[in-house]
Image 1 (tube, rainbow, N blue to C red):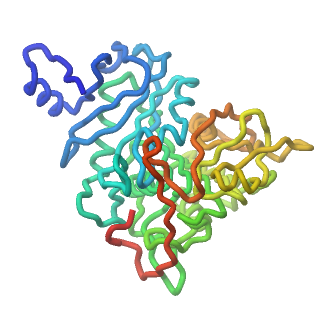
Image 2 (cartoon, rainbow, N blue to C red):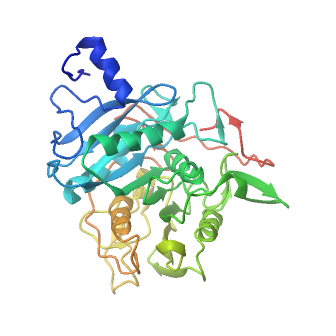
Length: 397
């Protein structure tokens, strides 16, 4: 990766100065932006920044519409275990949504080694203890500050999305009291604190999740997910289910009343729209969903039961409807999250959301995480290992 030139410095001295400043290192053909007024070459770029305990890396995407003259939003995209930033962008298609809508995407890289070459996982506080793990909370905070200082960013419109282990990392970042994100989305990954067993029931430990403020969140879950089970159980760091996590977030956000629940096809939508400080909670559950990132066929309109061949490929198929559904269930998470983020401070956040423009994405085997390219997947499952607490499980990702 090329070292940007700084007047009065060259070679290693320039590198050291850029690290000290916490700046991006961009490719040889990219310009080093200094906030508003500086263009950045469109496309994907690798970068490195100095965090609290190491130089950390990731990938960012600049849309072709970016000129550096107007403030734009940012979405942070957190990869799952045994994956990496590029693998996550292929999975989520966040960069495709960004190109259409004109915002920046930042995909950070976890500090733990994954199960395959070139893959990584997150050192999630409280639930992961593995040698080589770094301070992820500090890294995420440093990355947010760096993008704020480097590009022309609307600081009130910084959002985050996490898949699987990346969503668990994002959950804990918010639970730690960090206030960087205006809203957050979770795919097969919503947590509300570390799991703890109380009177024979697993639930979030209230002492481990103290958000800085009510947080608008949107979450997706597959009822046939065998990696992070919908009903709970699974690996020690998981244990409580999706509905329990949602209920806890409704309490943390001070929501009143029950969620408005509607079903269309095999998709159930739940919406809490009366929470403190204008926060909202939206949730989508897939009756036939697995751990795969949900994808829909391009020219169709309504989520339907997956065929056996599609289920094996990890894609929830879509068929046309005989009548109008109660809501639009054509739910590809990234476009739907973006709709939610844009309306996170308004009433009826997603209750009447218009159909999303869906991009094609990577198909993966059920229960697997995508690594970069074809480097491999992991499909391992683990029987329930109920513990008094899910904290500090060695080698758990």
